[in-house]
Every structure is written in structure tokens, then in C-alpha cells.
Amino acid sequence: MGAGKGSSLVHLLVIILCLVAFGFSIAAERRRSTGTVHKDEHTNATYCVYSSDVATGYGVGAFLFLLSGESLLMGVTKCMCFGIPLTPGSDRAWTIIYFISSWMTFLVAEACLVAGAKQNAYHTKYRDMIYAQNISCETLRKGVFVAGAIFVVATMVLNVYYYVYFTKATNQGARKTNRTSSTVGLAGYP
Picture: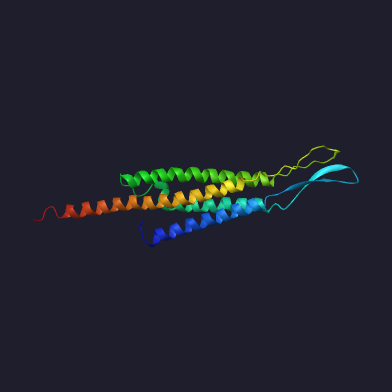
């Protein structure tokens, strides 16, 4: 788990997955369903007609890409709980802070994306409402997917810092172990 090619590849994959999730979030916001009230001339019934539902797919896509990035990072670092112990010190403290912060922003981002996709897929229908006054076709509030996108970027940044400090904290432990083990074998020789 050195700071070589493996860590660069993990950084790159996490960033790419988060950027794709960000792109899907923005696309979902731009393609939210809109509803318009229509009136059937034959029956005088009022009903809602909605535009394309593609934003729901974009929201789910953003959810899955962000989940993939988080899963990749947690799989590589073994959620910080299993595997190589972290060396006590400031790097360990920053690792824990970034770990908790990234999980908080990840959960908020996923909640925004799921709520946005669910609400975007929900379409109200007003059937057999003759001469209905002031009806509105419920749609997703503006900004839900944007909030998700903002938290996706925050998660990406925090994940990068988490992985950097995690790598430092585990590499320091490996160096200290190597130093101690090399001096122990030489203790008996003059």
C-alpha cells in the first residue's frame, strides 16, 4: 500500500467515479420532470402531463457511481479498521477526521440523489376533477440534485485527503517496524 502506482490508480479511479456522479447529478437537475395542467375538452377533466422522466435515471446513475467510488476506497483501505494498524500521531488523527467527514458527506449526497430520483419519478394525477381550481402538478424542487452534486464534490475531496493521510499513517508504521526489526537482529554482534 505504498505511495507508488497503486495509490495513484486508486486516487484516479475515485476521482473519475465521483466526477461522473457529479456530471449525472447536474444532468439530472437540468432534466427534472416538469408538469403542466391539461384539460380534456370532452369530459372537462383536469390532469397533469409530465415531461421526460430521464432525470430519475441520471439520479440513480449518480447514486451508483458515487457508491462505487466509496466502495472502492473503503475496500482498498479496509474501512480503516481492518488490516495494517495506523501509526499514532497527526496523520492518524487526520485520517480519522477525513474518514468520518467523507462518510457524512457521502451519506448526505446519497440521500439527496435518492430523494431527488424518487420525487422526480413521482407524478401526481388529477383525474375526474371537473373545473378544479388552482391545482398544481407536483414536481421535484429545484436544487435537490444540485445539493447532491455539491456533496458529491465534497465527498471526492475528503476521500482524496482521507486516502493520502491513510497512506502516510500506514507507511510510517511499516517504516518503524522495519527499523526496529533490523536493529534487533544486530544486537548480539559487536
